[in-house]
Length: 395
Ligand code: AMP
Image (cartoon, rainbow, N blue to C red):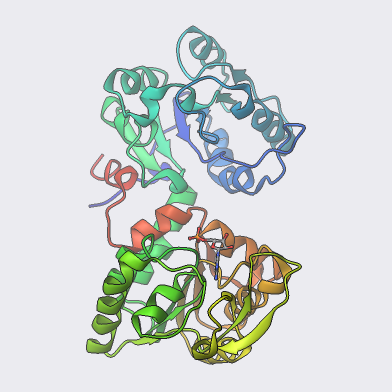
């Protein structure tokens, strides 16, 4: 079913509720320390302003668990946004009630204000109908540009939409759906997915959905050890999910039946503890001593993965290849980031750690699409319809 674009709406003089993802990191002085997400929202926001909308920006920040908490206030975001737009951005100390009504009522055409953290009310995450209706009462039209929360059925992403006359997707949301959609519908082959990170359990659905679509799956990070254990290999003290070993076995069988390459590390960087100062060794997986743990993929694995990535026409990457936060265990993740940078095909990266690795490796501008939603992009690629997207359909 089709989704309207913000371009399809008539916005002049209208009160536009714009759900954005301003869940940004703050430093110890409560200043925005990384404004990537704010900048990502600017194309939609500036378009709305140019069209003469009265823009009511709304977002969550952190996990205040349904209570007002100064630590999670969006006030510093209003200040950062004012800097970016070079204009005053009025701030409402509550996302609804008299405070929100007063601030939004004073908006001029083309002006934007920001509401306080939606999650200061427990009704937001509970997708409460009364709360949804109140939010909808603030606006004439609704636009969702918060792809990063589209996998959550909350009041501001789902509940309020039936109470709004018109609803559409913003440019960032549209771009995410377009690039991630291409991965599932007719990707150029060979299509390679690189998956890493801590747990197999977080990636089961995405592996299952991708097995039928990719030519190769490259596995790294701690999650590789559950698969290696399922193959009967020695993994020492590496992180494994013992209750997922049978499932890992089954996933590898599905891949073999479909003639999908399922690649696991051949060698790794090991240490006796997760510590940047620990002694390290590089060994083949089968030679892992009992008291040691794997903390990064090794040079042979890097070479193997790089070779597969070189000829790929489509690549999706989520999750680090090791404990990349510590320099001695970062080489595998950096090498994958660089290999994506060199790849001539379509490259899509999702998930905070992989995105950070792409930025740190200086290859961000060589990546086709950097997703702003880690969890949302994984759910999308698992074949699950995102509630925030479904709610916009047919509206
Ligand atoms: P995830 O949130 O599932 O993408 O996992 C990311 C985390 O996995 C990062 O903090 C990494 O440090 C961690 N990680 C990756 N590889 C390993 C490993 N071999 N052993 C322990 N932790 C790992």
